[in-house]
Image (cartoon, rainbow, N blue to C red; front, side):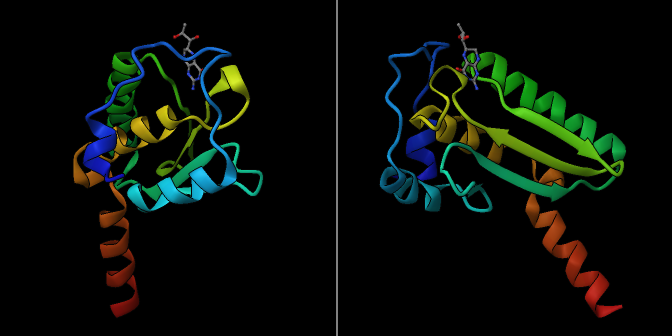
Length: 131
Ligand SMILES: C[C@H](O)[C@H](O)[C@H]1CNC2=NC(N)=NC(=O)C2=N1
């Protein structure tokens, strides 16, 4: 499954208690499709953390994620600390674990413009290392 395969799918706000829960093995198979996302030990959620360029970029990112989440009817937990440290957590609340739709939404969040992406973080770290 590629990120584009995931992005071609949609939850359509249909997540409920009948939504299939992914096994640990299925989670491990899907993770490579969403680079920079990591599963917790129990494989009940996936998270991605990065440093936004500044506070405004972090809030702008949240607004973009809001649009994705509303379109999908599937909502992540969003954390903003230290003015630009962003963490996004995804799980399917209805089943207390991960479903395919968490990966669909993660792939769609990854398509949000790059100023807010880990690419910026990597460049930022490289600059700090070089200085
Ligand atoms: C009816 C509605 O679509 C559901 O309550 C949705 C809303 N957003 C949701 N978001 C997440 N992450 N998990 C859910 O189970 C969920 N359920």
